[in-house]
Amino acid sequence: MKVLARAKRLDQRTLLLCLLTALVAVSVVSLLVGAGSVSPLRAFSMLLGSEDSDAHFVVWELRAPRTLIGIAVGMALGVSGALLQAVARNPLAEPGLLGVSAGAAFAVALALVLGASAASLRISVAQVGALAGCLCVLGVARWRGVGNDPIRLVLAGAAFSALLGALTSLMLLFDQRSADEVRFWVIGSLAGRRLDDLWAVLPSMAFCTALIALIARPLSALALGERMASGLGHHPQLIRALVVLCVALLVGAATAIAGPIIFVGLVVPFIARAFAGPDIRRTLWFCLPIGPLIILAADIISRVVVAPSELPLGVLTALCGAPVLIAAVRARRLPML
Image 1 (cartoon, rainbow, N blue to C red):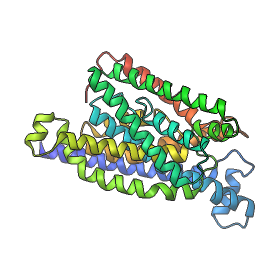
Image 2: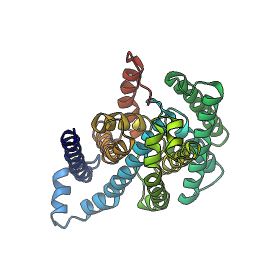
Image 3: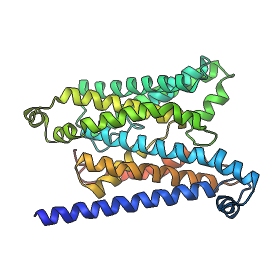
């Protein structure tokens, strides 16, 4: 048995290494491919040392920042989806479906309408909105006794998201001055984002990384049940509170710099569990490369599918993630985590 377990861990490490290699390859492709006039061959020649000022500007000033932001957003959404599913013990729990992204988007839209422009302010507002949205949906679900029903929990989140979306649209009707800026932001995209936005969210992401390292083992014990976790010396309520805080900070940061991008937090843990099994600690490790892989691949497709224009990233992830949600709902037996 020990030999089999060791072989399985070795296979998972090999697979994780393959995923990291694929992430590096996709990142390079993200630098080479775009909707503009700089072709992949021209960009590749610039990377090899050719003096091409236009290609240098496009690759390093436009494509490189959105690639780095895409990696950060993919990690944040993938990890937050796995954490939310673990704490809710629900495979359909996803920030975009449970109102977390909607809360962050509404808060940022409200801040933009009120005149906020600083990136750090938008990030703080988005994180507060994400926390409020997460607490509202999980609180209502627990209060109404639907927390253990995956379908009803998603319906509660969808209703909350729709309400916040309607309120956002209502705000735009009364403030046409901010309508274009808000509309460009709420569709979800990596285009036009700056490295300054990424630097502004790095402290929050670093704090969440340290916090997740502390709660990963207790969260794994919580999967065995509250009594078992308490018997092992952990505090289930504290663990849940810290997980909700991490989810709010990660989703709020990702939403502040890229807009609301849904279904990534559903698809990434789904794939990661297929590779890692039910252990949340291994699942989180696999979410780190899988999340950026999905975001960057979707971003590359969004650049070329309607070139010379670009398809919003949020639209593409919704089109790709919706079939996964439908397949999970139509499954004969929806597992509880």
